[in-house]
Image (cartoon, rainbow, N blue to C red; front, side):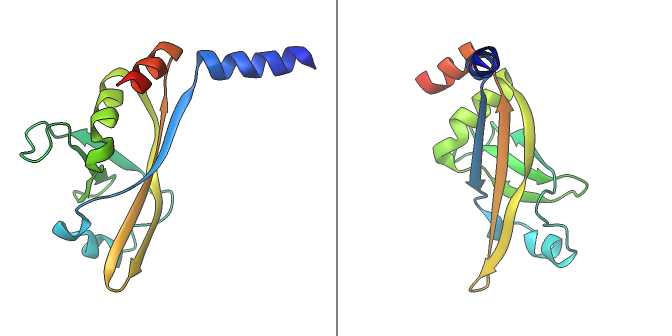
Length: 129
């Protein structure tokens, strides 16, 4: 029993994962209404993250694209974009999917779940940044 506990502990320390649920920013600037009308904004739908270093407002900007559709959903919030851009370069993205999408007072809200598999030294570097 102690050995399985120790194995789980060392697994979390040596191979941690970083996970977030983040809102998609700038949804109202893109064709997300058409994507929603086609029923593509479902929970668990895969998304792709692409760095956008030429963005005039945030040099660490990360775009969120819906897989299977040429539609840009929006961006990672600026408060998280620097760290997410660093993780895209240095770690492995395990999961990127839509967590939820809903309307409130004619405004569309989309949240994405991101999960990165990192090594322990990458987790340390991430938290230092």
